[in-house]
Length: 117
Length: 113
Figure 1 (cartoon, rainbow over the protein chains, first blue to last red):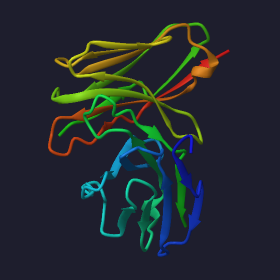
Figure 2 (tube, helix red, strand yellow):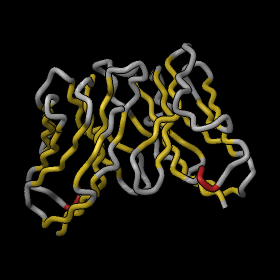
Figure 3 (cartoon, helix red, strand yellow):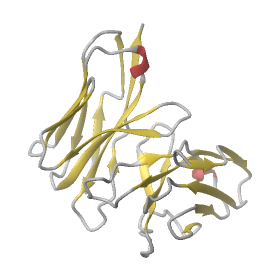
């Protein structure tokens, strides 16, 4: 597609339920990032995928959070047993190259607004 | 630990004014600094990326400067327009083992017609 696509755009769930968020990066982009943005705050890094390398999971806040990526395409972020503090916008971004490269320009999706009741 | 601060948190100016947004960071060991804009309901759009060896970058009416030694960057917007209204975020790419972007909380800019 022309840009990074995320689905769903909005998700309302009950505390304790599992949710799955999806990200379709731009074709050919080897790097993929997940971020979380709480209201009025900056972005918080969650996880980073680069090609077929092991992902950088250092930003995941707890073991309730996990993510997968199939090759260099779709990624899913799963939150198990959701809590109210998980409510936030979850943003996905992709880029041609990894961190620190001269062509590391990030392209973002529109995000998924998650509300945990 | 790298921290990024943006002041002010919000700014409202009349159309046509030139304005400056500020970003400061605590550790000068960075690969680059990046400016983004965020529109409600939309994702972030990359505006400018300044490598650590550069002093500034320009794109149209936007000019971003970087002073690594003082830990500061400014985003200058010339002849502001209502369409410039958005939240502007800066982020630094640190030179540590993690090297993931560290983000400021943003400046919400409103340009009044």
